[in-house]
Image 1: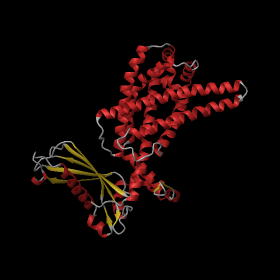
Image 2 (image 1 turned 90 degrees about the horizontal axis):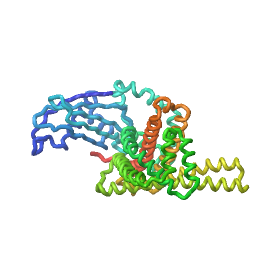
Image 3 (image 1 turned 30 degrees about the horizontal axis):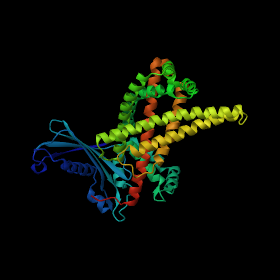
Image 4 (image 1 turned 60 degrees about the horizontal axis):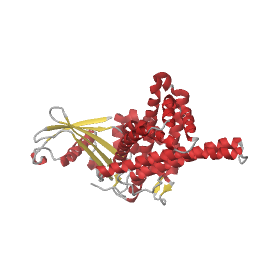
Length: 445
């Protein structure tokens, strides 16, 4: 990690009418610290420009914690955590004379060839100077990226294009991995998972409370059998059995109100996370956002309910065909498995597509069924399968935690599903980002 500190004195011209440093001047402080940090390495913008390398700012972010005032002596700490490739990221921490943190910032600069105006790799001058500070972290990465196998793979992926040969798969993957890291997907997924965890139990009670009112004789038995097969639900099997077999209007009314409110909170958190990933400002009012979140909640509940009915009806039809000699017993087993997977895929794909299309503030760029929604659907199915396999064979949650183990396993599963939803949305955002990079040259600012 490369760390450098410099100091600046706040001038009167840099303050506003309140006596505080004008917010736009922090970008100037960032530049002063950035230039001095490079100068401490024996490098400067002038040297780079003479070598035909420009460094335009592509991203700039600030978080204002405390105000700085006229004549304050500010200490600006500059940090470079990663070896630059086509971009370099500078992280800033600004402290006042009392050693209190007043500002956090981050700036991303691209390397641009002066003659062509196109993005290029970081010049050896910078990488060689930063190498002693970052060597321990980049040894394996540099070894991997320099290998012939990796370069051949990159070349193949770069020749595969989407959107009428405008965007390469390599560019999409490059943006995707960078965005997943920079957007802190794991932290955002934990926030989304927490919101949905609060809603999951009243939602389950609401769905199961509907079962006694469904005029299908086999659906109750199938629900109980399904609960017995799922490791995460065995501990609450008796409770589900009572809810499914005894009609209770009071429980149904209360659970629907509570589940709708809490589930819509989860949807709102998910939509806000989508907006942060795509760096979109939410212009819809609170009530419009709440209404959309409630709509998505009902869609999710409807899809789950319809899936259960389709699985029940489908199994009954297949069993009827076997009993009447239309199908063999062996074919029945494979047909049921195929039916379950097909229903699960279609319903999950539809649900995720609806969430991606209507949830975020900006959705008109993508078709209803997008590449990201397909990726998220496949990942969700794989994650659910492998997690269920792990719980059944290696988890031991029930042995270690008792009956609360089912709740812990369910929370972990919701967290993993939240990650898959955010990754799928990152895929859509990365495709748009790659298309924009392909169509536009970096702006020199």
